[in-house]
Image (cartoon, rainbow, N blue to C red; front, side):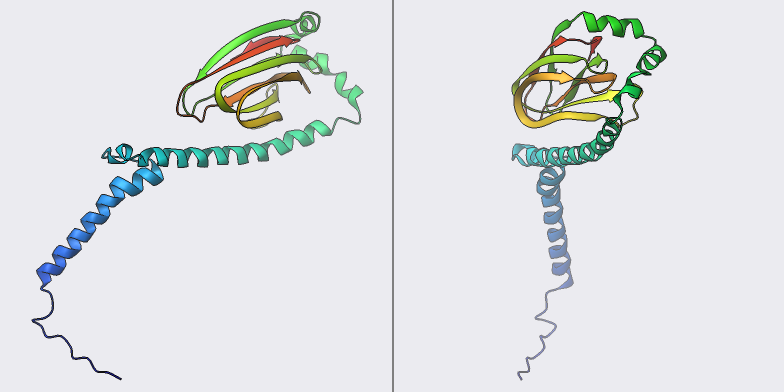
Length: 224
């Protein structure tokens, strides 16, 4: 066992030096927090140095990915209820078909719904999405009607093809298909119920993206 002699008072650093060292350490820590940590982790850049170093963009990407993951998780949870509801009437389709005209009278458009079955429509619509922006286009359709569609994007986008019944509760929808980072899709959409059916796109790139949608078939009208 070794006994080390205690330092004398003259060998210890003075209080003024300790205080100065503490202040310098705090200043350096605060500087790193403002110029490095906040821009790269939270996309908060009060000085502008983080964006010049590319750290703010890194923080924006982290936040965007976290928000997208949360949105996908919520959409997956919400999609479970509509699928279960749609499967319940399957064993007895005839009773569900009978009250359909009464429901159309409630929304005050039975004549227009009947006319749509005999006269096909076609539209071509273009929308421009800014970075991070989401937009949707819906077709008002009656159950069993069919629409052919094709959409293309100037850059990859995330998309979700889904539908809601009239007067549906918030978050109550049925998802037909979805995808990430694709530049187009085409096919036929058959309405499983009376309501609105269509497409949602979100731009996760750093520039504007143009989406062009072409539709043809039995639907009442097109809504942006």
